[in-house]
Amino acid sequence: MSAIQVHGATVTYAGAPHPALSNVDVAIDQGVLCVVAGATGSGKSTLLGLMTGNVPHFTGGRLDGRVLIGGRDTRTHPPRELADLVGRVGQDPLAGFVADRVEDELAYGMEQLAVAPATMRTRVEHMLDLLGIADLRDRPLRTLSGGQQQRVAIGAALAAGPRILVLDEPSSALDPTAAEEVLAAITRLVDDLGLTVVVAEHRLERVIGYADQLIYVAGGRVTSGAPDEVLRGMERVPPIVELARLAGWTPAPLTIREARRLAPALLTRLVPAAAAQGGVAAAAPTPQGRPLLTSRGLSVTYRDVVAVRAVDLDIRAGVVVALMGRNGSGKSSLMWAVQGSGPRRAGSVAVDGVDPANLDPAAARRLVGLVPQTPSDLLYRETVASECTQADHEAGAAAGTCRALLANLLPGVDDAQHPRDLSEGQRLALVLAIQLSASPRVIMLDEPTRGLDYAAKARLAVILRSAAADGRAVLLATHDVEFAASVADRLIMMAQGEVVADGPARDLLTASPAFAPQVARILAPGPWLTVPDVAAALVPVASGAVLP
Image 1 (cartoon, rainbow, N blue to C red):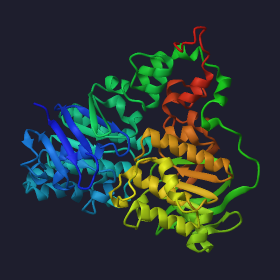
Image 2 (cartoon, rainbow, N blue to C red):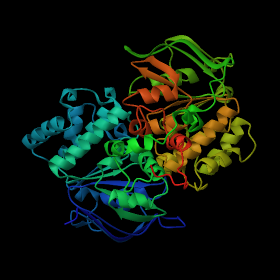
Image 3 (spheres, rainbow, N blue to C red):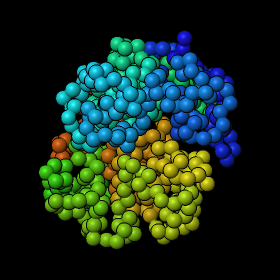
Image 4 (tube, rainbow, N blue to C red):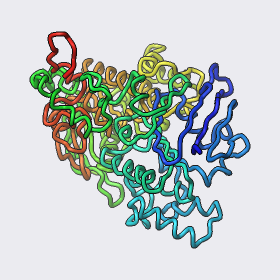
C-alpha cells in the first residue's frame, strides 16, 4: 500500500481567484525518497500541507477529493491523529524548537504522545546515533550550526516513530558541506529504516541524485514519475541536466559521477580560452577606481564569542562580490556591522567616505541597503501594495518604483495579500524590491536565493548585474554556489570570522572541492563554471549539431 495517496484533490483558499491545487492525483510508495519541485508560488507548500494533514485543518480553505496518509483519511483524522504516522520539518528549524537543549528537544514530541519513559530514552539514544549528533546532546540549540540544527529537527520529528517524514527545503540555509551531511542522514533513513521521505527543494542540483520519485508542481497541477522522465518536461532544470541537453546526453545523468563518465568526449570539443566569453562570473575585469566600501580592522563579538576578526574590505563600484563560507563563519555578522545596525567591537567602515552607523535610518538606507536572511523582519504593513507605497515614500522614489521592481523580480504577487502570507521566496523578493527602491550605493544580500526558483534567480542575477553596471557595489552572502558562479566577479571566503581567501570568483570556485558548482565538478580541471560558459566554448560540428 502507498504511504501517501492523493485522489482528485483540489484546494481553494478563501478569496483566491483560482485553486492552489487542481485535481491532483499522486501516490508515494513506502520506503522511497520523493522530491517535490516547482516554481515559487506554484502550490508546493499546499501539497506538503496535504501530506501532513495541515491543509485544510490549519490553513483553512476548501479541500475537494481525498488524501490518505498511511491509510487514514485526512478529512476524518486531523493532524493530531496523524502525528504517529507523519513528521514534518520546516525551512527554519530554530523557529520550530520548543526546548533549549538538544536532548530535551528530541524528547518533547514523545512527551506529548505519552510515550513511556523507558521507550523515550531508548528512542532518544537511537536518534542521537542515527543522525550523528550524540556529542551534541547537552548543547543549547541556539549554539548549533545550521546543519546541526537541521539534524536535531529531523531527529525530533522522527523520535515519535512516524513512517513518513516531510521536509520543506532542508538544505536552503546550509553551506554545501552541511547540506551533504543532512542529505546523507536523510538517505540513511530511507535505505536503513525504510522511511518514506518527501523533500520540497528549489535547489534540485543538491537532491535530484538521491531521488526515487520526482513530483513537479506547475500552476496548481502535478506531474509525478521517475526523475529523468519528469525532468524532460521541465523548462528550468539543474545545471547537470542543462549541460546534458547542451551536450546531447540521453538519458540525462543525475549525479556528478555519471556525468563525469560522459565528459571526456565533450571536453575534446571545448576551447578553454572561450570560457572568458561565457557566464557572468568571468565578466569585465575588476574596476581600478576608488573603493566604494571599505572597512579596516572590523571586529564583532557576542559576549565571549568572536564572530568577526579584524576584517579589512575594499569593494569597488561595478563589482558583484560573493561572500561564502561554512555556517557560522561570520558572514551575517560582518554584513550587519558594515550596514551599521549590527554591533562592532572595533574597526571602521566607510561608504563613499561616510560611516552608515552615523546616519539616520533614511539616509543610511540610501547609502547601504541590506536584505536580511529573515526578510519578514522588515515587513510590517497589512498588504503588499501598502509595503510598496511606504517604501517609495521613505525612499523619496517615484510612485510605483517598488512595485515595478517586485514585478520584474517575481511576477504574479498579489497586491492585496498580507506579506506574512507570502511564500519565503515571495517575501524575499518583496524586501529586495523595498531596499532597491532607495537606490542604495551598496546593496548587500544575506542568502538572497533562499526560497527562489531557477527563474526568479535568473531575474535576480540580471537585477544585480544591472545594479553593478550602474556604478553600485553588490555584496551577497550565499551558500548557493550555482548562483555565485552565475553572478559574482569576486569571491571572499570566510572561516572562523576571518577572510581566508579573496580573489576572482572563477579561480576560487574551480579550486574548491566543497564550493565548486556542478559544471566545474563535471569538467574539472577546466575553467568552466556554468552552462553558458560551456556553450561559449563549444566548437560546433559541421552540421551545426552539438553532439560530443
